Image (spheres, rainbow, N blue to C red):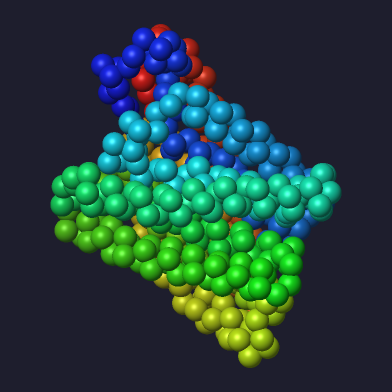
Length: 367
C-alpha cells in the first residue's frame, strides 16, 4: 500500500524519507515469526531440535520487534497513518507483536534467560501490548465512525486487526496468572482476561458479518486484499486458544465449581468456534487459490497468511490436549507443517522486498 505523503513532508521529514516510510502492517512479520516459535510448544508430539529451533526463531522475532519499533517511532508517522482509513486498521499489529514476543519469553525464552527474567520480560511486554491493544480497539472504531468514510464494499479482513489484540491479551495473559500473587491480584487478572476475550470475540463476530456481507453482495476482492481474509481465521482460532488457556489456570483463582465451568466452556465452546474457523479456512483457501491463478503480487498483507494459521495450530493443539483426540493431534501437526512452509516463503519474499525498497532514492514513500 503506497502512501502519497511527499507533499506534506517538512525538510526534516524529507531527510528522514531517505528510506521509505514504514507502515504498521510490517509488525505482522513479528506476529507471524513469533507464532511459528510459540506454536511449536503446543504440538502433541515434538522431535529433537524443535524446541531449540523455536527458541532461535523467537529470538529473531524479538530482534525484529526492536528494530521495527525503533524505526517506526523515529519516523513520527502515527498521525498520518491514523488519518488513512486503511492504514489505521493495522494499528492492531504492534500490540499483538509485543504480546506474541512476550508470550514466547515464558514459553521458550526461560530456557535461555531464566524463569525470573522471562516472567519480567513477559509482564512488561504484556502490559504495554495490552494497553496499546485496548486503546486501538476503542480508538480505531471511533475514527471509523467519526472521521473515516467508507464505500458500501469497503469492509475487508483488515477491519479485524484493531479488535483482535484484546483476545491475544487474554490468551497470553493466562500464562501470567500462575506468576501473579494469589488472591485479588490473580482473580483480577483472570477476570480481566475473560472480559477482554468477550470484547474481542463479540467485536470479531460483528466485523465478520460485515466482511461476509461484502463478499456476498459485492465483487470478490482481488490482489493484495485477499490475504486479509485469513485474519478472520486467526481471530476465531485465537478465541479458542484463549478459552483453553484460561480454563487451564482458572482453578488457581476460582472456586472448584466455576473452574469446572470454564473447562466445559473451553471444550464445548472451543470446539464449536473451531468448527466455524474451519469453514472460514475453507473460504479463505478457495479465494486465495483463485487469486493466485490470476496473479497475487507481494505486499505486507502476505503476513496475513501466517499468524492466522499459527493461531489455528495453537487452537487445534489446545483442543487435542484437552480431549486426547487423535484426529485433532494429526490436524495440529499438518497445520504446523503448512505454517512453517508458508512462513519460509513469506519471510523470503519480505527480505527481497525490504532489500529492494531500502535502496530507493530519497523522497519515495512506500509502506
